Length: 274
Image 1 (cartoon, one colour):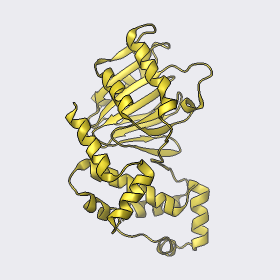
Image 2 (tube, helix red, strand yellow):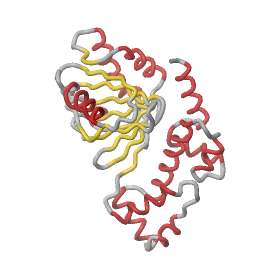
Image 3 (tube, helix red, strand yellow):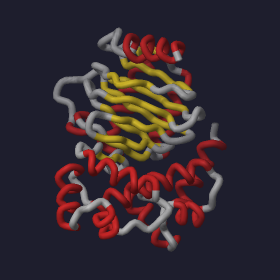
Image 4 (tube, helix red, strand yellow):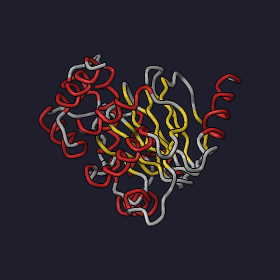
């Protein structure tokens, strides 16, 4: 455990911000490393390969699936935890510039298209500070510059952290029963709420409805199962409470912008390209 702590201190808390003007680059297979809550003076672009990465801020839990990246603005406290030891995380840390576009001021999760994927793969051999004026600095800055133009779909792959303890129990109930059909009326009755009061609690605390939370949570679990490659799409649908594969596929598409089978095929293409 001390070894992991040393790695976090050396890399995350010292090196990233040591040179204020550089773009810092770090690629790593994270193993089981949990990076505890920290922040940087530079903004972070974190791209994941191979599995899911959980990024947690004070108010939200972000779910970063393979072949997506999360933009983390400068100064935002967050922790990072890979789901499995096989996760490859590619990081670029950018100094904050004057009069930056709004895109760079808030966190978000975005799919990586072929252009951005090739540019990220090009950074594979980089590590450490990219000095201003160097060819690698120019390329990295170009990656940052194109993001607002090609990343127009901020995916809803985050769930708010509940403040109310009663709601926390309900969310754990949902988590533990994703394979079943969970009805709002049944949840309200089981936890001693009227439907109206529970609806209000969800809206007040989480800023979303029960069905919005439930739907996103099911799809996030489905992504995890798909990436494990142990179950068929039909079996994954059943595991997250969908008896109809078309309904599951349509819901998946609404959230991720692609069908479950297409998502799996894209991941296999990436694996073959390594």
